[in-house]
Image 1 (cartoon, one colour):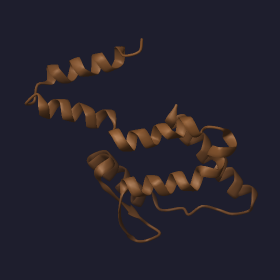
Image 2 (cartoon, helix red, strand yellow; image 1 turned 120 degrees about the vertical axis):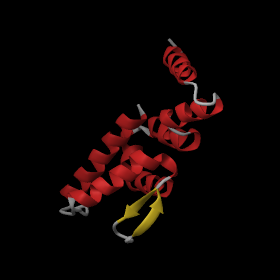
Image 3 (cartoon, one colour; image 1 turned 90 degrees about the vertical axis):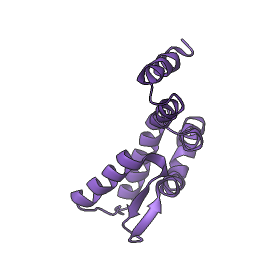
Image 4 (cartoon, one colour; image 1 turned 180 degrees about the horizontal axis):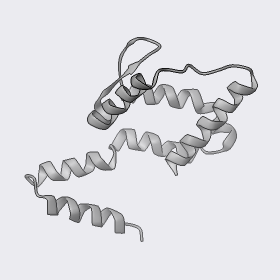
Amino acid sequence: MAIAALIQATAATLYRLHEANQDFRQYARPLLMENKFRAVRYGLDGKLIDFGKQQEVPLRDLIEEYLALIDPAVEELGSREAINGIRKILATGTGADRQLKVFEESNGDLKAVVDYMAEETAAGL
């Protein structure tokens, strides 16, 4: 729900900019791919390039800026509770973070990771 609310509020924000005859910065694909690589490789604790500032910035800081940008649309759409799921992910980490933690705590036992994933999947069913 959090990701869907994030995308919905982003689309609404971009639509508002378009309606006001404003645009959002556009960057070359290789630059965007560099940030995508960094996000995949380093996760929430990594740094991405803020092209406006022309410097590396912690991903968590960029996500907070992103949430501030879309906040008016979140309010209008009534999706505050769902968006708070993004903040929960920032606080508790992603599923990948949790899987790595289980892997490390079990001394590299992949079965423990699979068991953890099965438990998480079944939770609440």
